[in-house]
Amino acid sequence: MTTETIPVPALVGVETQHRIEQFLYAEAALLDDHRFTEWLELFTDDVHYWLPTRVTRTVRERDIEIAGPDGAAFFDDDKAFLAGRVRRLTSGQAWSEEPPSRTRRLLTNVRVTELDSGEFEVRVNFHVLRSRLELHQDSFSGERTDLLRPADTPLGFQIARRKIVLDTTTLPAPSISVFL
Image (cartoon, rainbow, N blue to C red; front, side, top):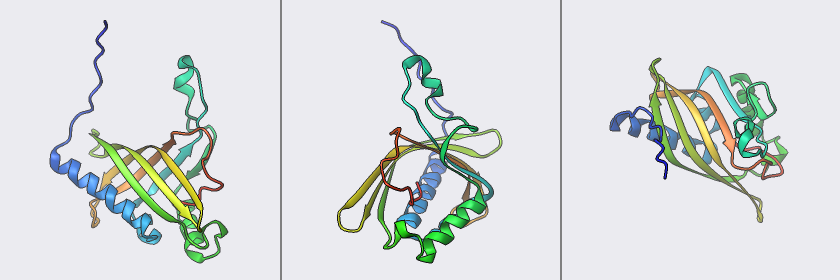
């Protein structure tokens, strides 16, 4: 029997963990309440918001299962592109969101590591349920890795980077018109 040590990230204090979790919950509420313009303010001007593709691989190839920075992505956005998506969603002209979807975001297993820069790497598991019209439902689950910067804002942080990795290898919906 072999015993392997599980790497444990550097722990942050209970207060910091709580503040970051409250930030994540507030962000989820903004999205579920369709307050997209306010949500956009949570991002730094240099944000990278990215959903790389995933391909099923053998055990030996697991390190290349998720596309790298130069690989394929469902979206690979900066702040200007996010702002364009928000404008489109709030215009009433986005056919895939007219009438708007109902969403519920569940976040769990929040793991916070403080970096030498004073920023925080936050890994969180998520589930987003999207209900549209009378019978259409989509379910997205996976893991997000965020880079949070302390900021002089009401919620105390801004998102400088978000990498979203779905549990599925194919998009489990006809469109991805909701933010994850």
